Amino acid sequence: MDNYFNRNENNVYSHAEFQRSLDQHVSSVMKGVYLKMTVGLVVTALVSLFCANSYAYLNFMMQNTWAMWVIFGIQFVMVIAISGAINKLSSPVAALMFYIYAILMGLWMAPLFWVYTGDSIAKTFFITAGTFGAMTVYGYCTSQNLAKFGSILMMCLFGLIIVCIVNIFLKSSSLDWIISGAGVLIFIGLTAWDTQQIKQMAATCPGAGDGRLSTLGALSLYLDFINLFLFLLRFFGGSRD
Image (cartoon, rainbow, N blue to C red):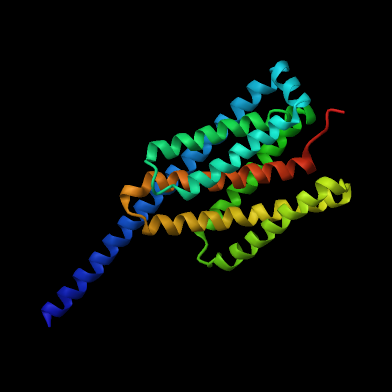
């Protein structure tokens, strides 16, 4: 009988130790995710501000809109490359590609400073940060499985992309406002879902893959933040005109 209780006590202790170790591992990965994401946002902001203060750069972009599409195309390819080949890349290479992507985003976003006032951009950034922070905390802490909502949100996102393409030709201001509102709601939801997905992957990821996972997670949340910011900017951004 004593041996029975001793085995049970050892099993409980082992389980508690395992859970504590797992929680520490997940926490470590998530810290890496948020750190890389933050660095990526800082890189984007600095590049964007630097280019926004360059008349030559902005003038070139305004007169050669094809350059914006080229940058956008490279970004699109890089997202696919990082996401698809993440397990084949070393951790430093994956991180380097992410930061290059952040630089390209800064180049792409620089003309916003000619469209919107600096104060409205700053205000929108803080609104975005607060909203993003609340949703990523919810996604990390909730015990509710968000997988079903994530699938719905991804379908809505694809639908939104199609509508955006259609509106390029329609140029409907009313539809543009609807797109903006839908975009805000979709990326608010995706922030929570992506956070939960990253947390779940961290719980099953071997320690050797932590660096790559933190980069992939940082890219996902970075994209959520940037897109949420861009859609909110349509509501809170003050035009220079």
